[in-house]
Length: 445
Ligand code: PMP
Image 1 (spheres, helix red, strand yellow):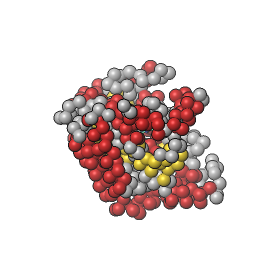
Image 2 (cartoon, helix red, strand yellow):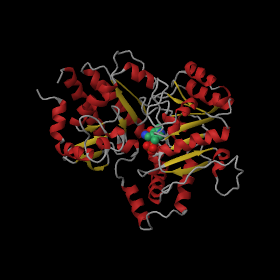
Image 3 (cartoon, rainbow, N blue to C red):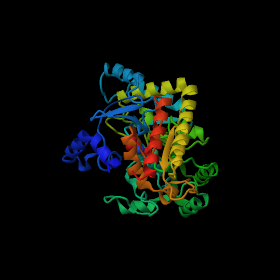
Image 4 (spheres, rainbow, N blue to C red):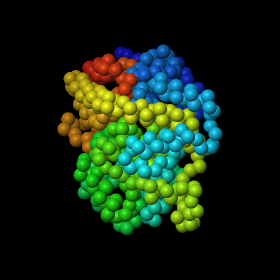
């Protein structure tokens, strides 16, 4: 009998050859661990709108969308044009320029907490700087993050990630740092308060994603998010909202607008750069001004942020500015449409799988979603912890992913991010693929 694995292999022979070649030069054949899945990933040839095509000529409706970056779909005309115009002026100068200011100004206008903006090249760098700022500004050491949260592999935040075990997930990290970074159980007020109290007078900050990218994009309860705000305020600690995924996506003003919470600092990435490498730390003036290069700081006050040869790269600024301008101008149309399509995808996929007796729960918010395969129908998936304990993550990451690829749909964590380029037909195609897979899974194909 032909399995879904055989079907995948048959459709993707060129990708398999390229993967073997890649492995001879790049460890594991990929440069982002999520790019690998067994038996090998498909290699992309090009992308446009909601779709990409692989090197074997297969077409896919894409839901990964450049790591949740392409909110307007792949290769949007307005971004391409903006970058082409910019390239006429040069490539990279390492000197300040006007568009950098305009780009920062629109961020300041749109993101509620962004009294000041500082650019860097990646979300990882942004979270590294945010943690440093929190420690510098408060004069304290302990940083709390969510179990199952992900802020890039910077050493300050990688330590406790192997949750629920408070231990390093990688060799090569300084063991002492583990003392100062701990995890909180997301959406668990009592459990989190206990850990916050253990930090005593040493709490520098709490960093979290409002909807966790590796945790089903499940929204925080209002009680939980209010508790985080009041505890940080009470303890003279900073609330750092990691908006690398949620920024300009959950609403024009990101998760802070959507959940009506103003953090002290926020980190941005992805959508902010219109598809080009980007990171930014934004937040309260009094905190970010500590990094100002035009002031004579006493040694005891100065906080170093940047460098970065490519910080605020002109192509990123041009793309980012064009993106944010467009989102601002069209917000009244874009966000309700993303919301409606996200809802249709969530409800449609869950219904299609359940129709064939496959236990499934599709979680998420706005344009973001993930499909889970719970061991029990009544599982409550309100945190990364619940998802890891109550669902078959392997089935989602491996079987569901490959099966969806054989039907022409590319998912990440069982779902992904809807863009404005996803048509109603695309959503129907995704739901139909889930239905076909449900039928195959239930009949053991
Ligand atoms: N924070 C969050 C919430 C993320 O999802 C990511 C990456 N996916 C990062 C930070 C790191 O960003 P980057 O990959 O741009 O370094």
